[in-house]
Image 1 (cartoon, one colour):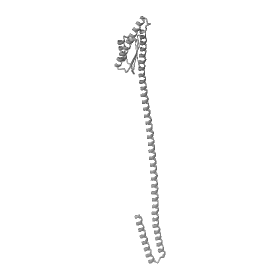
Image 2 (cartoon, rainbow, N blue to C red):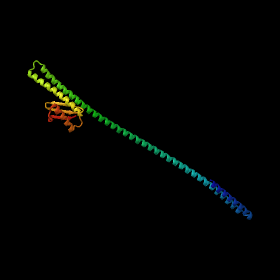
Image 3 (cartoon, rainbow, N blue to C red):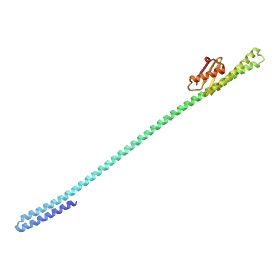
Image 4 (cartoon, rainbow, N blue to C red):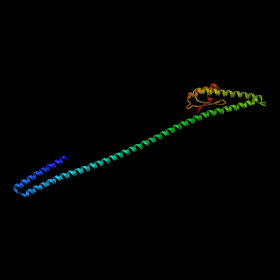
Length: 242
């Protein structure tokens, strides 16, 4: 701005010099035409000065317009960046929520599977416990009924001596079998088996043990106990697990 004012001063000074020169020329030659031309030159200089001001004003207007346009563009770009950032944050938030939901669903699924597995295992264990307890109860009930029958024969006045003698032998055999069974089941438990049950049918003896994996070593231990305590042959001993 200072630069433009300085130019205007120079122009005015130049114009003044031309006027003075024209006046002196008019005085010396009495030539009115030269004075007019000099005055015309002064007007042209004024126009040039005014043109300079106009150009300056126009330049300022253009500059202000460009600045406003730049500001508007900057605000628009800022708004777009803000929108993009907001959209990106929303998208990230949505993805995070979806990921959390998926993880929660997986965790819930794993928890349900574990619970189902634990429940199944618990049901199997309960079923096994029920099997052993129920089977022992049924076996003991059968022996009790057999003993009661033979005792009735002994106590009956209508029984023959041979019948009474046979009943006495059967009662002794049943009691011996019950005692042998109790001893064997206790010995089998000392070998690490949680539970077991023994069924005797004549010379054949069946043993069911509560064990997940019945190895050859475990089978040999059970056979050794049964053959020793019940005077049974190995080929008559049948072992299974449950």
